[in-house]
Length: 108
Image (cartoon, rainbow, N blue to C red; front, side, top):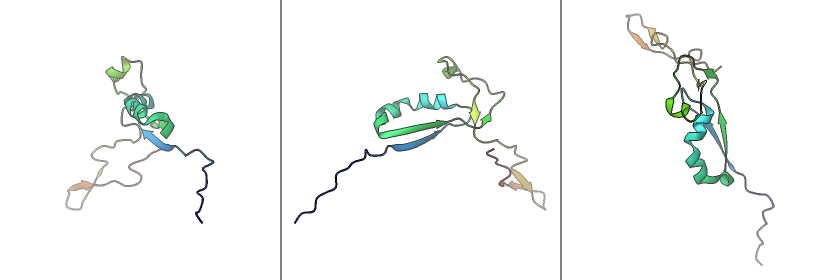
């Protein structure tokens, strides 16, 4: 006697993709950059979530290509970049070596 396959009663779940932009960028720019990818894989297969970085960048000039297309700042980032001195520690012999600890890279 053959076993019957159960019939699917639920629609298959979409692949969920979290999209995080790079430095000096925004979620709108990331959407623009990924437009072909989204069109290729279709919205039927994937669910895209775009987030903006939590750090507002000051003093960064607008990206001309995107400004001409109406995508303006403020541009964002995810991390606070630290100075060379903050990223090193001094050894007893006077040399400086790379040093990063949990308080140096702060995501809040």
